[in-house]
Image 1 (tube, rainbow, N blue to C red):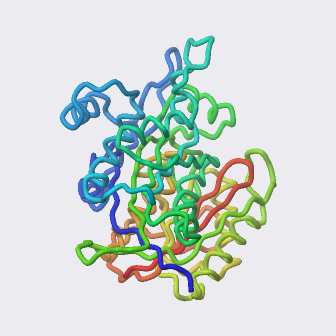
Image 2 (cartoon, helix red, strand yellow):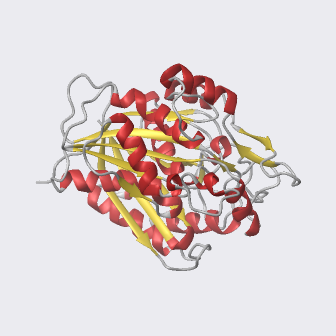
Length: 377
């Protein structure tokens, strides 16, 4: 019999707040972190979701003093600190870091690679600060990284390699990231509109998120979500374009639901990827319809947070669990008129609903796709 694996605590640092409760309250009020920002000198401002650096520095100083860390590392430390203060770190505790770009800002004006730009060094620096005893694990697989990090923790604990795990995920907005997505002509000229007829591209965002995952929950937990199933499938369609038939996402969802031992009809809510690009949104709509999930209430959080790359999957999983706890489904911000060829039940206003089974999906460059199924306990 497989070990049952649970998420029993989480935290996040975003432009909407430095903890989960402040984020949730702003989401219920319909507030978004997306605004015009000038990231690159001599270029136009972009819509993006970016933390106020002064507030970040103040929050970090209040919690850690004047320690020498990069901006992204400070975000990681702030998101993880409340969790490590509650749970013991032992020889059987895993530390998993999800990111796509890490400290890539350190490369600016450098001729020699700084040590901190290596993802393994970034993970080790965070792990050493909190006293983790096991070698850090890095998950960096484009924009499915955050969802995959949950799956990696679940599968390693089930395999008996660890008893519990702290998973953190994060990326920051940088010139490199903005320039990269701009070269694909993927950045929108207005706040993004996932699945909407008038969408014209993504907004980039930044955030960090952290969850505690364990096989031995105690009775003092405020909540508990069982990780029932997971899957990651690469359709190898294109270096940046998703499969037109949704093969990889379809297979990921099918596998995750099969492992969860439930049916599509039992899914109560879908936290989708929803980047607001024409090809991604269309691919997702096709995959969800192939799985007969078109009637399930669905949202994308990109209208609130932008696309946070390696943080998005973990952050959006946390928000979906908050939705289940409060029995409130958050609307997919800026959605007005369907702009995909297949029907979807996109949430348009705060709605009350009991949520037992959550499906969280993600897709990314290189044809990668991932899905997890969570159960409210």
